[in-house]
Image (cartoon, rainbow, N blue to C red; front, side, top):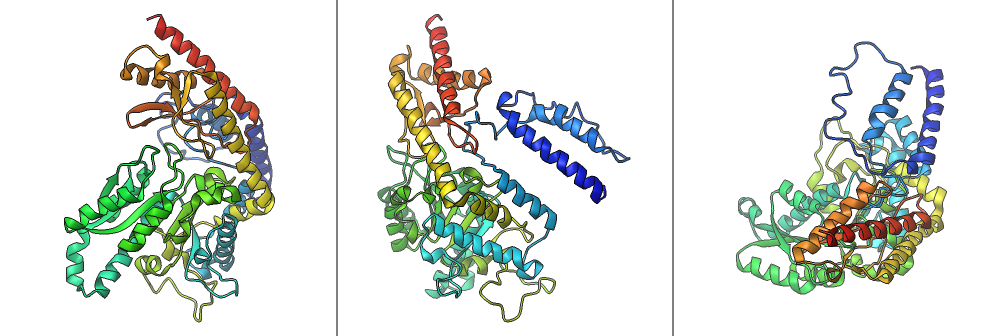
Length: 495
């Protein structure tokens, strides 16, 4: 493919993408293919000779499209949103054009410096404390800074590595020798609640530390008291607490942990405090939500995903650290083929030392496009629209009388179930009915959502957050919920 054909095919692909977005809502949001469907449709070896763009495009439409769950449908309410936007796509196109491997400043100075600038922009936009900024107000380098990771799972891993480094340094400062430090590494303990994302457990598995899962309170929050009790027991057993994750907007219910109380304990016990705000962190662009996040200014690290609810295509996970010393110290490996810039200034950062891989894409471009083309006001309007629709859905479900809300509706997530009093039978029957309701709604094909379990109780959890969604789509969601509930309850009563 030469430049002229690329120009032609590129325009065709843009038209194809635009057509997809104009028509995606006409298709069921959830794919209904069976496992292995694609293997039977594809050749079992790569082609020996070149194939045409037309043939590939035809296969996308006839073979790939049926197996796609349409996350960008306005009627997709599953998990948490995976926002896309046309500005972000344009930024990704520019990134693909440059196709750099930006592991240090000299690889492409603009890539490093734009990431530094944009992450400071974003940090200020969500109200982060100045401790997390890479560049101080006077233009000199700060101790902290932001870096774009692929996912919140990667962010968990790198901050836990940094936390381990911080704790080991403290043990050595207190007189422990290197050999003794090696002997106690297995005694390090990380703390999570039973509502913390699975990424925390995975990170702990990777770095090889012990894990303490703490039961959340009645509102699914990790509390100061519960954390203190767990730490006390572990210290009595000769273990070494070193890390705690507090969540701002849990996956199951969007609950907010006791951030200030956990920060108190982290300070007194010398724990690294990480705030996982993968979903709800985007809401902090709106000042009215910032009082809910009191305590994050005392954290060692903070992470949220613009690729969830802030109009930026996957992958783009924003991580800030208040002091990069332990992060960089733990992840830096020098080689002669990785040259450093002599007399490096404040903007010369080797982001390879802030992440797990060596290479990295120019992800700052799409975030830059989004922040410039929407502006702060446009991003705030995007968030507020979804919160308003979620509050409306909550009110409508309550007014119906058959449903109960299982957790406070703060952001765009509504967790509910059919009331036990509406369903004839025991707790098992209640769970079975609500689980059946999830299946019935998704099999209907007009909308898609997922269910969850809250301490053994089945519930439904539609998440409102589509980049292109409208109140009409939320109204359709409510309509389908009501209709399917009526059908499920009627069938159960006839059995």
